[in-house]
Picture (cartoon, rainbow, N blue to C red):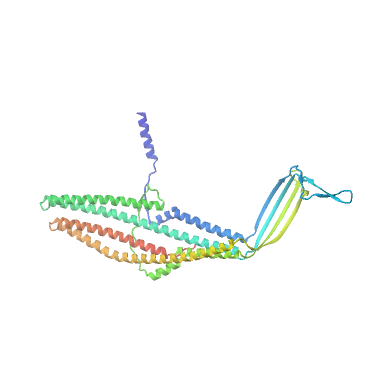
Length: 449
């Protein structure tokens, strides 16, 4: 008995500890903010952008002096060593004989403090071209971030619109079920009054069951669409969301040649590829510069002292200062430089071909999206009229059926046509919104940070 009470108490506590999720009102703007904060691909693009900025700083550092400090300690042990050369000693007969010379370190402890500096004076364009390549690479990463941000925006807008469509489909299915239930009451009344048959009642009961199944499926479809939206914006799946925005129903007149010109001038992926070409071109120039001299200045300062004691006295230290200029001239390296130069040139060619390919694909996609936008706009006008006519036809069919002038088939077909027309209207609204959003993504101004 006690174990049972403890189990019930534990269950109650666990239920009490579960987080209580309320309904979250979700506008499209809020969904976009959440996605931009949580999307993994956008986070990666943001890191790539920061890496590009660091590479510019790294390349800039090659123009500046290098300065380093060092410290060394040597401990000499009492071990006799042979000298590199023997010592010549008088042999007493007017000549000399060679005697091996043995020595030991004069002092046991040696401390060396050093300071070295170097400054590049001339690199035949290597450093400048690497710096320009880094700047172009940074610009490419900035444009890639913008493109990724727009891709995330489109993904969220499409998911939001699909969720709207799923919600509308659920409402339409529920409305269709309500209409079919009312119609079923009419069928039962006709059967009671002798104007209908049991066969009609049974047939319509099947139709009513189908509408109930369609309403359940539409509800599940809305949940699936909401779950996908939650995933891409980073909302906890247990949260309940309610969309507060609806379809945009204001659609501007657009002209293809203007859109094409704007896209070619503003599309971030094209700007990124153009900068990537600059990266490859500057790397190619840097490889060519490897055939020419490199000049650098250097200097060093050494402060060293040795003593039998661990810490030498100040008088035991000596100073050494060295300064000079180093000129490096490549002569032969087995063809490595030439191979790297040729490889860099091919990378330039490949990047230019990629830019040409992407530009053609974007123009094709923009044209297809533009045509789809025009088509969906024109379809929308006709579908609105279709819904109005279907509503009138369904109302008339109900009246005719109630008065014994129409058939059950006529009533069922009228209700089905109305449901389909409403679904088509919602789908067309979604399509025209998606096409407009995609066009705007291609032609939007690029903001400068």
